[in-house]
Image (cartoon, rainbow, N blue to C red; front, side, top):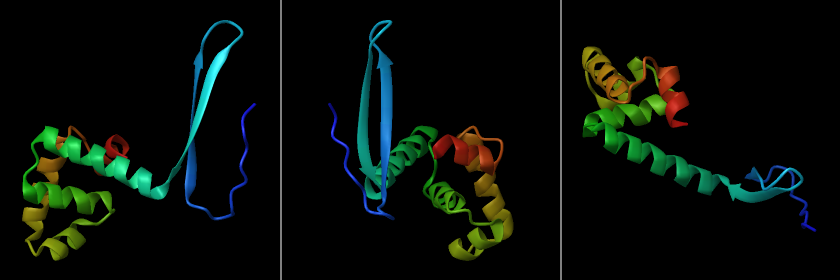
Length: 111
């Protein structure tokens, strides 16, 4: 029999549960508790790997990080101290290299 632990309200933990059917009557179920730090590290590793595979330049990677934070083109322009046309150029290249048609698709792929 499994152990059930109470969790304090507001605790930054999530549970990942998986199940695999063994036969018609049996399933193997496992659960792992993860905290936000662990989730952040997993996401960071995934994003780094995808950016590397896509061959993003340093500037495109900076733009990607800002896109993932939900920054607008104007905010990217200001943060990177580049022209709006340059920011749009890097955004377009980043989306193209990651095979995303739009920002929303990029977020779905990476997060």
